Image 1: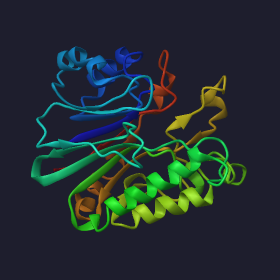
Image 2: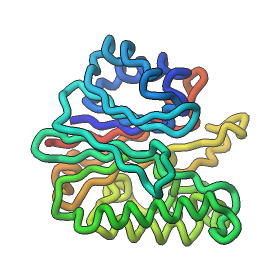
Image 3: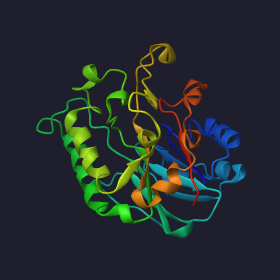
Image 4: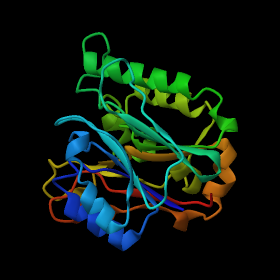
Length: 265
């Protein structure tokens, strides 16, 4: 089964690129974040025509939003409201064999990495704390967590560890919060399959005129599996995990690249 996560930064604006990617990569499941549309505005017909008739959607007008589309039927679906904010940042679906697939869009956190003066950063940390409580003991369960988690945790998940230590997405307080979440029983597939010194990025800012040449990226998009699924997720080795960097260079791209994992379920 091939699972893909992609912050699409408006699914309606980039539906042509989404369909192209589905045709080229043929994933079984595509998890989208930042869809930026209400449920009744989601381009269902385009996905049905592409062969993905099964959809779990949690959207709102203009902001946030997540959606999981699939070739195969879901065995149930649910949405959780984090921090009682009413934001659409999570949707979960049941897969074959009792596996739960969680699709997340974690708050970005604003610009100032101080929860005392920046409510957006406080929200991000609270959101991560609620996720940690939610997944307590997840290691013994069959669970997959994907999405734009808006944190690049390792030194080689950013273009400059030293320069980004005080930049939201790579600050020590965020990284520690993510590590507490992973410690509930998750495996970060990208880092499990790569060497610590390997530079891994999935996001490049729109502000860079030549993003590929400067390559000032961050790994904000993640695929994790519970420890119970570790063997199945890592069995394929490096070829099974891909950051589709070339998609970032397509016409009118999202600033995120899709990330995929092939695993046996």
